[in-house]
Image 1 (cartoon, helix red, strand yellow):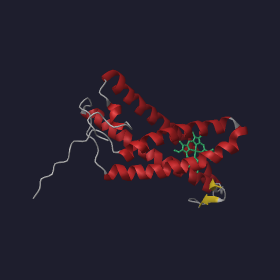
Image 2 (cartoon, rainbow, N blue to C red):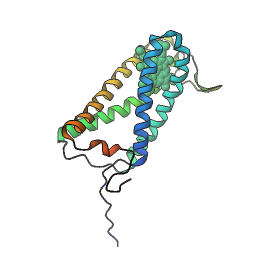
Image 3 (tube, rainbow, N blue to C red):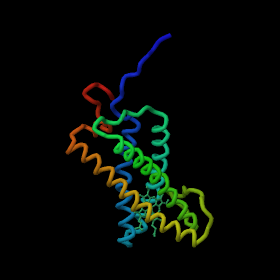
Image 4 (cartoon, rainbow, N blue to C red):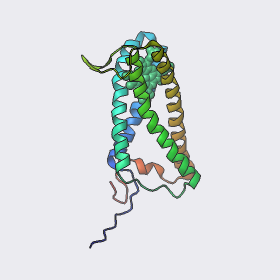
Length: 187
Ligand code: HEM
């Protein structure tokens, strides 16, 4: 019988890292598009035509990312993180995943309730996932704004924590998510 010991891992796997940075760009863009389309109504049709498929792409990426996260080994927490910080980090990650899945679904359900098809490209549109009901639309419209604020707050807290580790503790936390290989040869 062979007792094969796996080498310790120091980084997230390549799929996780690619999804992390591509989703960061997509979600930041989505915030700007969402806020701008409400503030500058002359751009509303154009921005909404981008906002809908981008939101659905975020949903698909979030599902792939969650599956990858649940099925692959994770690097252990850094020793600079105490038990309380580790717990907060884990819960804030669950919250981020929950919001990244919920927000696009709320947007999709909201348009379904307004009987407005979610157009992806050209004539390609998604089926309705909620009944046509104007009261439901109003509730989901409010939920979309609340979830956007919550997502923005969680996202900002996440960036502040990473900046604190990188600039104050200098523990190299960003290397765990970097796209280029580490000095120890780990891809
Ligand atoms: C992570 C994904 C998403 C984020 C971060 C996001 C964010 C936002 C934000 C910040 C607003 C402006 C809210 C306000 O100021 O009240 C907004 C509005 C809107 N979103 Fe999203 N959204 C996402 C996904 C989606 C999806 C998937 C759809 C539909 C398929 C959608 C449909 C809409 C619509 C129709 C509005 C404008 C509603 C109106 O005209 O009053 N969103 N979104």
